Length: 221
Image (cartoon, rainbow, N blue to C red; front, top):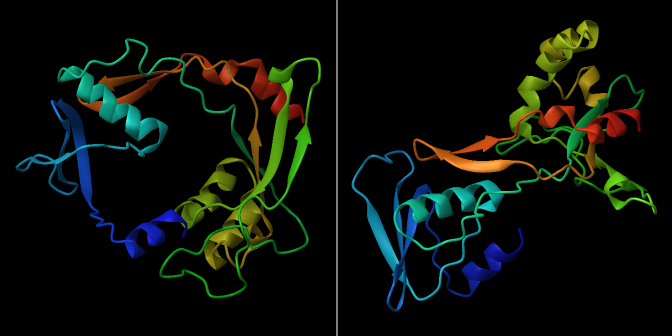
C-alpha cells in the first residue's frame, strides 16, 4: 500500500515465501543465506549484494543478526539487550450501543457488510510534565482478521458469557462483539527484555514483566 508498489513499478524484483537464515560479510559486500519457508531444512540458497537492508522488525531482524553472529559476523555484545515493548497494552470496551466495525475482515473478506475503518484514527494523550516515563497515549484501534475467531473465547474466559456466546453463534461481525471498542495504550516499560536464541529461534526473556508499575497505571487510566 506504500513503498512496495512504488518499488515494483520502478523495476524492483520481489520474492516471497523465503526465510532468511543469516547474513555473511564478504570482501566487497554481503551474502544472504535463505531457504524456502515451507522447507527450511532443504537445500540452502544464497544471494550476493553490495548492500543489504534488514527490515524484518525488531524480532525478525534481531533473530537474523543473532544467528549471523553465531556464524562469525562481528556484532556488538549488546545485541538483543534492552528490548522494549513500548509499554503497549491492548484493552477492550464491551457492551456499547453502536456498531464500531473494529475487526478486520481479511482477504478474501470474511464479512461484506459495513466498511472497517482505518486503525488509530484518534488518540488521547496523557502527558506527565514532571516524569516522561509516566506519560501514556490511548489510541482507538482495529483488530486484524486473524484474531477474530479468538475474540469470543477471550470474553468467555473473562466471564462475559452472554455476549461471547451470541458472537460464537453470529460471528464477531454480527453479534455483540461488532460493538466492541479496542484500545491500544502506548506507555513506557523498563526496557528490561533480552532477546536470545534457543535452538536457532528467537526467545524473549523478561522476568516479572507483567508486575511492572506502568501496567497498574495503565489499568487505572
